[in-house]
Image 1 (spheres, rainbow, N blue to C red):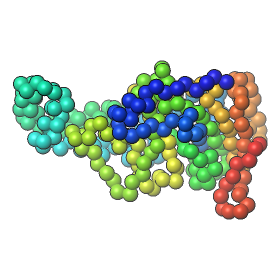
Image 2 (image 1 turned 60 degrees about the horizontal axis):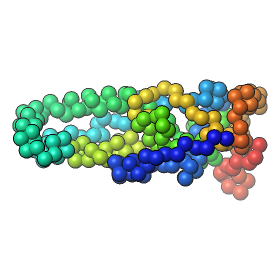
Image 3 (image 1 turned 30 degrees about the vertical axis):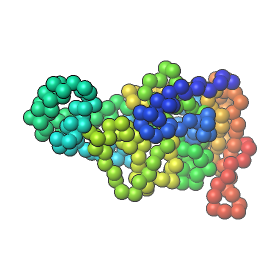
Image 4 (image 1 turned 90 degrees about the vertical axis):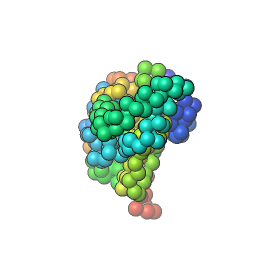
Amino acid sequence: MKPAVKNMHIPDFKKKFGVDAYIPERDGLLYKYFSIERGIQCISQEALYFASPSQLNDSFELDVDKIRFEMTDENIWALINRRHPGNEVERQIAFENSKKNREKVPALMKTLIGKLRDACGVCCFTTDPVNMLMWAHYGKSDTGIVVGFNLPPYSPHLKDFFVMKVLYEQERSFIDYFKNSTTLFPVWAFVKNIFWEYENEIRAVKMDHNGLLKYDIASVHEIHYGMKTDVDMIGQLESIMAIKNYQDYKRFQIAHDTDSYGYKSRPF
């Protein structure tokens, strides 16, 4: 098996965004729930689908309205101080121009942020392969599969590829673009309503691409079959994995935990 690609950019990520990235080789596997048909497609294509935010279940995903563009003099100066440090003449000119156009700037900024949103792709994982609600919703009522991946937050060929834990909030928060630009990305892309907390999501975001992204087959470490997954479909999946030379992955099947209303995973 190929060794996992090591992420050399985690310190930069922490410094830039103020939030530590999720590191699978340190923190554990990432699990992806599929219907059996989608699981077979993923395995055969050796690729994960990164959806546009508009395709996701939550209509608030990367909502542009979460970002506020209040054009107060203080906020204008905060922006100018970042763009023109140490040049008083340029700063003063930029300030006067911004004041003249303060009504136009928020609409322009929202348009630019909206384009960024449309260009990015999101792939959702979790840390729990035996979550009953996840099996009901994303495992197609126990008939699907869960694949356990070890995917490093960055790969050398994937620029602007981030993996972080999703944070959940009761009340909707907003981001002041001019004052909080360094933390804008994680608060915008990795904060959701507490309604979704059961997913315990680890989110991967590719900032400049949506659609399929290839993965290294050595990153597939586990397959968990549902209690009702069709036996013939399991055979089809495993035949594909054998042909494509997936190796050293462990197989499990979900079962009832007889001591509770929970699920457990046992060797298959």
